Image: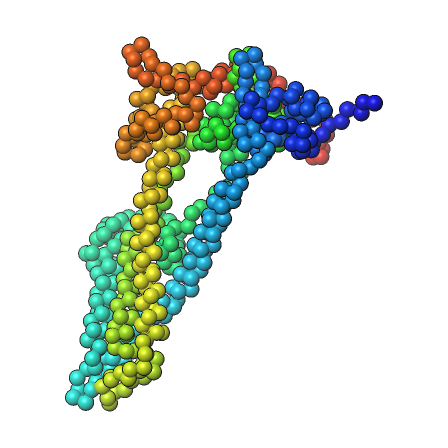
Length: 484
């Protein structure tokens, strides 16, 4: 007895396929999946689409136009351990940085403000206490000189009438005081210290940003997109874009189509329906290479802010060294304020509260920015490499969408502009292989690269787009209106 037809959810159909299918290097067609599992063709197709998204599958097309689903890793996820470890490291780093920012904010009141006030009080105490001969105590001249040095540094840096004062217009630029200033967002002092030590806070990334950009591209291209269109707005590689599009097909009633020449494209007619003007053409989102990642500033503060924070921290650092040199323990502290006897410390251990603690933390507040400055070189190389990849992607997408070969010289120029150096042959070959390029030569013998899959996909999407009916975007007649 044959069961009546039912419509399975994609996840349920995929669970049946996982039990009954054995992925092979040659791939699986919808018919293969249907025969092996007993599922209806429509359920086998939706199940394969779900599996392509879940297990990072890929699509292939035969010269006869048959669509083949390929699962390079089978129904396993070998990347999960690596990505889980990466997420753990990233999360741990975020926790450490978060705790670091919390410590810095708390330490701001202790190490920079409170300790500075304590050391100033000690300096005053040293200045007011004298020995029997009327002379000043040992250590007074050092702390007093230090105090004068810090005061003078602040005067010459921040006094509005100082020729060396720092203003928003630059060092010694007082002309900005007469111009109308642009409104600025007030940044709390503790946040400036955070930036000085740990760098500016990275803006939160919207996890739905890529999806929204793809859907905007779909609507702008009349519901028909090729993989190259997806790569254009996201900057993803072909291997990354394939499973993402499989997920979007499940979520937005899309389908994968194959042209007579073997081009693959994605059709989302449901996303064209709009309550707006159907004749108005939606603007395409900007390309990924138009908004490349940039190197974040080391602190994000003005020069004057960094100088002031460094001066305060430097004052605490030197004062802590003076406290250690003068055995300024808590038990010896009252001796500073004895006006009748010179300060003679009683050895009772290393000064911890006024010496070691501010010394260690002040050193750390200098060491962390230095370490970040050193690590910034690696970040600079990473940003340059990603910019080079996007530059290569720009040339690939631009030329392949017009059915043209990409000159090797154009690819080398893109990498050179981003990194400052010419790529090696091996590096260039690796970058081209990422997008499925094949080397050829023009009539003059110059090396070029063709991207046949991207070209066929672009042609297929363009042809189907040209045949698309404007009626797909129109709504039906309003049958009910709550405002009436």
